[in-house]
Amino acid sequence: MRTPTALATGGVVLGMLLAGAAPAVASRPDDRPTSRPTEATRPPRPRPTASPSPTSTPPPTATATPSPTGTPSPTGTPSPTGTPSPTGSPTATTPAPMPTADRTVVVLPSLDGLSTSASDVNGQGVVAGSARLASGYWHAVRWVDGRIEDLGTLGGLNSQAEAIDERGRIVGTSQDAEGRSHAVAWVDGRIQDLGLTGGIFSIAYDTAGDRVVGVYHVTDSFSGRRAFVRTGDTEVTIDVPPGASATAVNDAGMVAGTYGWQDWDDPAPDDYQAFVWRDGVTRPLGTLGGATSTANGINDLGQVVGTSWTADGVFAAFFWDGSTMRRLATTAVSPTAQAVNDSGLVVGTEGHGDRAMIWPDPSASSQLLPLPSDAVGSRAINVNDQGVIVGQVDYLSPSWHGRAVVWR
Image (tube, one colour):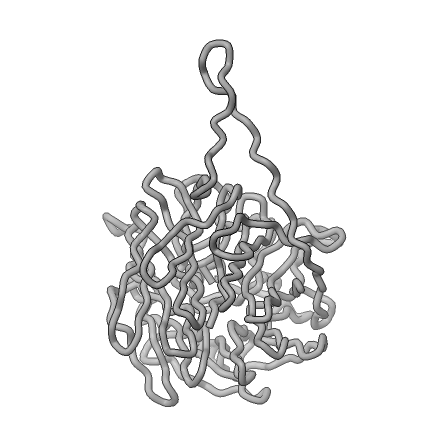
C-alpha cells in the first residue's frame, strides 16, 4: 500500500552485490522514485538497477535518486524575507527550527551485529526489511515481536524485502544461483519466485490484497524499465511511456508510479511524471509547476504522496488528494514525502539535514522524528494505519553503519 524508499546504485540488478557495500534505499527503487535529495543542485536521476532497501554506503549523506533536489519554501508558509537593512536591501533571517514530534524510537536487532534497514510495517506490527550478514551480503528479514528472522534467498547471495501486506506476505527481490535477480514473495516464511517477467531482472516493490507491483528491465538502462501489476498468476505491463516504475498499490488495486525516466544521453532526460493506474486506465498527476514529479506512496483512499519540482525551480514534497496536487508545508531544504496512511499521516526525510520527519496531516507543517542516542542521521520510509513508522538511523561509531528503527 505504501512504497519503500530506495536510493539507486549502479551495476546490474542489486546495488549491494559487492561484499561490504550496503544496499541502497530505492523514491523507494531507485530503482525507486523516492529518496532523499542532498543538495540544491541538479540531481542525478534514478539508476536503472534495483537495490535493497537499506541505505547506501557511507558517507551517510548519500546522494538520493529519482527525486530531484532543491530548496523549496513550503506552500502556505511565507519564505523568510527578512527585515529591511539601512540600504533598503533585505537582510536574510533564519527560519524557526522544525519542532520534534512526540515519538519514541526503538532500534531493532540485527544479524551478526551488522547493518539493517526497515522498509515496511503492517497492521500487526510485523516489520520487513534487510540485514547485512558477516560476509557483507544482504538478506531479506522480518521482525516479529522484536525478533529478527532471516528470510533467505533463491539460492543466490543477496535478497531484499520491500513491503509487507496485512496478511503477512512480503515482497522484494532475490538473486538466484546464477546471480540473476527475480521478483519474489515470502509467504509464511517460504520464498516464491515471481519470475523475471520477460526481462533481464525484476523487483517487486509493494503488495496489497492479491496484487503485487514492481519493475522489470528489458535492458540495463533507464529507458529499459517497465512497470508491472501481478494479480494472482496474471501479470500485466502497465501501458505508460518507457522508463517506468510501479512503486505502490492499495487494496482497491490503484497503482502509483512514475514514467518517463530516460537515459543520461537523451536530449531531454528530465520529464518523468507521477501517475496512478487502475484497471487499464492511467492518470498523470501533473507537477507543482515544474517539469517533473515522482509518486512514492498511496493509501487506501487513493491519496498519493511524492516529490516534484516547482515553477520557481525548487524541490518540494506533495500530497495529491485524488484531484489536486498541493505542496506540503515545511522548513526543510530538500524534503521528500515517502508514504501516507489512511489517517493522512505523511512520512518522509529532510535530505539536506539527513533527518526523518512527518506531517501529522497534509495541512500541517512538518516535524522531525527523534534520533536515538549517538545516531547522526535518519530516514522515515513507511507507516502503517496505526501510525507506527519504520526506517533507518545512521551511526558513525565504531564505523559508519545503519540500523532499522521503529518510531511509535
